[in-house]
Length: 249
Image (cartoon, helix red, strand yellow):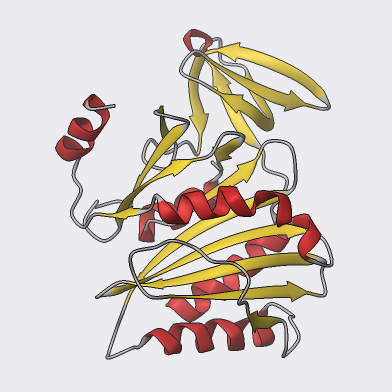
């Protein structure tokens, strides 16, 4: 499952830098546009190049919105809480740097509900951060995940054999063993990936941008590192425990 997911992830990163959501108003009107800003009071969207603000008391729902994937609360920036549909397979917390927001669309939400997948994007550029937790199966080791990712990128995402290279320059601060790789594909997408090994899981962090070299992601390396270093893994986080976390904020 992990092999297919990572290949799908690379393709998704390449093709989905323009995100649009559907805002359903209480009047019955629907508006589709890219969300520029979302707070507890209002949502600001880009509608055909024009920024429009809708207050929450006007909105019935945001189609594809998932309270787990979009549960952002202020605490020295933002704290993101993510979990899968059962909140038993993958639950984790991390601080979301200023200028980033969760991506909410149907495809992303499907991944989030199934496996705890999370994607966020910069509000001012075509840059994305993704977090993908995967449980080890049948004696899989750390290197198996990395090799499978590299091979799938070559076979299914159109990347060259040397598109994924070990990176020695980026130093993250996780509490577990990790490996770092750069990758680039002919489509003009460049990324930095961190594989972090937990006792029973491997967490895949990815920073990606549009460009032929590292210049497209270099300005966001500190943000990426802050997501990794603030990452907290919790198995079996349920609604009651989430409520306790939020009350402490």
